[in-house]
Structure formats: structure tokens, C-alpha cells
Length: 420
Image (cartoon, rainbow, N blue to C red; front, side, top):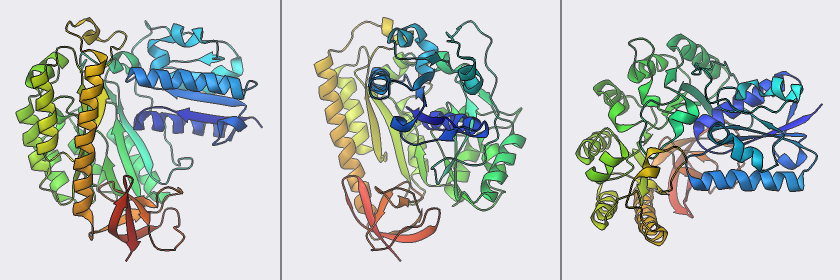
């Protein structure tokens, strides 16, 4: 029996796709292992959201070939879709697949033939695979949408993932029932552009309303673009406690001038109005993405970023230093920001974000939440609003068991708590 390790870079969608690939290997008699050092086949699911993500992939496959030279290395995903020739030039890849053919990995690896992505192939459809269990995961991920039609100027994901497409509501409900019956107490619905979910005239809010008619789990909603929140979705968030009070809503920049250059579909007033509404939900955590150093970003634009992050009801931000991406429209924009300036701006934003998160953690002390026991030495579980918690009690945490806990402090970005 050959041993397979799937190593994943990037977002929750990549995590879900990797779980599907694990399931396919497992169904064909392969043994799934956690450590790539123990594997005969190493599948690397790539990400290309930033230059740093590319470098992490290249560094990893180089290390894998050096330390486990007899293993077959399979590269697939977003980076291999966009830059197949660059990936192959490393000389570290035995099999290369893109975004649309990655789920054929078992069949392709058995054929032993190298595959170079054909960018002119037909637009992919939604790959609907019913998955009932997740290897080494307490919480279940369910991809209900893939692809993107937005073409923000800094982004190449539409070219890597294709056009927006969705899972049918009937298929979603079938998977939700199955996951609930298999005792997953938290289900996370996700998508590349989740808010663009459509099944005929049904939108994301309609799908969530139907999902919540099935009992037995709490529902976490992954990243949603700000223009996708309709009144029904906002009302569901504010009034249904089974929806976790934790949302990731990408801002990217607080300057209207930069938002326009980015091709975003809102202005800072619209974004803030949404955040103010959602902040009415008790204990809600709202995270965001912010890009600094976008071409033409003036000092005034940067100050708007910094001040908004400091003064708004955003809990914290993932800070990205702008880098030119191959095939992204922003690569051709003038007035590039020098790297030292980008670094300095990024550090300032990181500092404010860290301070904001610490203030939020302070507000959570002495409050009670529920966690679902995790199979992890680092944390015991996540609260409804996504606080990572390490239990202070001298008690062994059981995986997938619900614990009522009280937050009593935090250290190094992790909350501490006691079982009550």
C-alpha cells in the first residue's frame, strides 16, 4: 500500500479540495499520512495569491525533493494553473495538474504521464463531490461555490479558478445532512467568491436559510465580499444564534481612490455602513484584508487605511504587502511604491491590527462561550466567534466534545479559559 501526503497552501477552498483528493486516494486503497517525510507520493496543493505564497511553494518542493528524493511529487492548484512552465522548470515535479484536472490526480499518477496545463480548455463546471468525513479535522468544510467573475485589478484568481459557479441547493442539503449525521458539530460553508452563490434565483442568504432548517451543528460562514450582503443575510446574522458571530469581509483599502483603481464595487462609506450593522451582533468578530503599497497609494491614502483600521469596528486585519502578480492588470499601473515604503506601511498596519485584536480579547475576558474539542496540542478549540482557546484546567480535552468555557486571559494570540 503506497502512502500519500497532501500538503496544502492557501485558503479554506484549497483545504476542502485537498480533503476531496485525500478521499479519492483513500477510496482507491492508498494510505493517507500526515508527514510528507513518510510518504511515497506527496501532493502539493498550491496557492498564488501573493509573491510570498509562490515562494513558499517553490521552497517547499525543493525541500521535499532534497529530503525525500524517492517520493513522487505532484503539484496542482492555482499556481500550477497560471505558471505551469515556471513550476516545471524547478525540476522537482513528477506530475503537474492545474485547477480543472486536479481531481483526476489518482488516475493521472497511475498513468505516469506528465501533464502541462492547457489554458484554452473549456470553462470548468462545479466539481460536485459528496464528502462525508474529513481526515484529522474536527470541523467540516463544505465548498458551495468556486471561481470568480470580479476581476479586481490586483488579482489573478479568476484566471486560476475560472468563472463563478455554484453547487445546487439540493446537493448542499444532502451533504449538510450527511455531515450532521456524522456528528460534525460545526460546518463551515465556503467559496472563492461565496457571496456570488446562485442556484437559479436562489442566493447565499436563501441557501443559509435552508441549511439552518437542519439541526445538530453550528454554522460558520467563510469570507464574503461586502457588496454581497443583502438585507436577508444581515437579518439572519443578527437574529440566528446558530450562525457563528465571526465574519471575514475583505476591505483591501480604505481610500476611495485606491478602491477605484483596484476595481472594487464599493466605497469606504458603504463598507463601513455594513460593518456598523453587523457590529450590533453581540461579541461578533469581524476580520478583513488590507493591501498596502498598491500602485499610486499616496501617504494620504495610507493614513486613511491606518485611521480606518484604528477607528472602525473591525476586530483585526490580515495585512498584505502589494506585489505584482503575473497576468494581473495592476502590474501595468504606474507609480509603483518602493519596497522600503511598503514594508514600513505594512509594519504600521500590523501594529494597529495587533492592538485592535488585543482590545477585543480584553473585552472577551469573563465571558462564556462554547468550544468544540480539537485534536491539537496548541489549542483546545475555537469559540463561536473564532477565539482560539487553550483550557487552563488540568483536564484532557476530548475531540469533538462541546465544552462550556469562560475566558480568563490571553497570551501570544491565544485565549486561555476554564471549563465552567
